[in-house]
Amino acid sequence: MSLVRFGVSLPKELIERFDSYIHRKKYTNRSEAIRDLIRGALIEEEITSNKNVIGVLHIIYDHHQRELSDKLNDIQHDQHDLIISTTHVHLDHKNCLEVILLKGKVEAIRSLSEKIIAAKGVKNGKLYLTSSLE
Image (tube, rainbow, N blue to C red; front, side):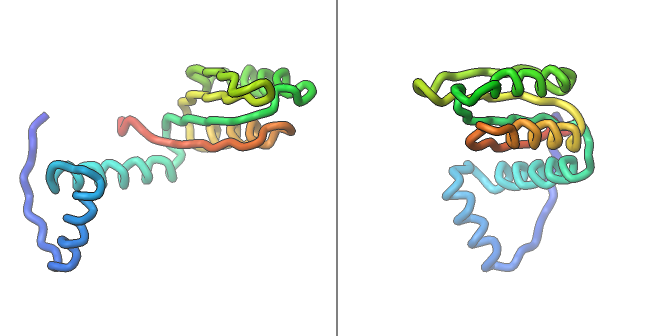
């Protein structure tokens, strides 16, 4: 990878705040922080434009909830083309954690995630989206 150097002029107060941010986030230098901020902005743009993205959905649910496991499996099998992998963890006697790795168009991933999270017996869930910046 070749690097390109460029200069940026910023107000003193802004660079002081940025340096404080760099310190709090444990960056080794301004360049690393700027690269991450740029990547984050580009990923956010991809997420809002319905491009192909990668998603991580986690849910916690009561596995004693009648027919919930079957319903979750049916929903996932109906959209198997979006699912890369699932991991199932028994948290305690009653609760399970499931982590589902997804890849596809933003809207399809969001729709699938909403169906899963809305299933009766799912206590909570959250979808995280990112991109490989292809």
